Amino acid sequence: MLGAKYYAEHPLYPLEKTLADINIDGINPWGKTHDLEDLTDRNSSLDDLLGQAAARQGRVMKSSSEPEKGGFYRVDSFEFAKAGVPVLHAARGIEIIGKPPEYGKQKRDEFVAKHYHQPSDEVDPTWDLSGAVQDIQLLFEVGYQVANGDKFPEWKPDSEFRVKGSTSCGH
Image (cartoon, rainbow, N blue to C red):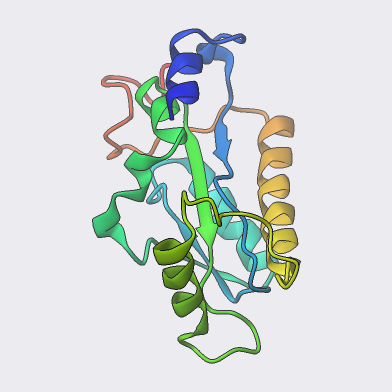
């Protein structure tokens, strides 16, 4: 997060001309999912684009399954949000296709307990990266729509990151 903080304070490209921050903070190594989680909590029009793209993949966008962990506030995108740039941070889903309902949550909890930010947090050749591909295709689609759109993404009216008195984020 220190790099994101530094960049937000010293951008190479002016933040007022930056369309969005799409954060990829990890991959889904357990296979394709029926769902995905929106950690940015539907704060901007980016979340709408994410939900539409997920639906085109036959997936359902859900809110964070662990809101008590404050995922929105613990990732690089938070620094961009504080600077007024609309952000998107989707997390891997937990409803793994072809697996029992509890499988995805068990795998995630096991990874966090044993490997997250540990020396063992490295590539495992047994991973099923089809879910990572699914998520990257989804986020690419959202980014492509933003880059080719005719307007900047906007904060929702009730978002805490919306600039007061503006209809978007001051753009």
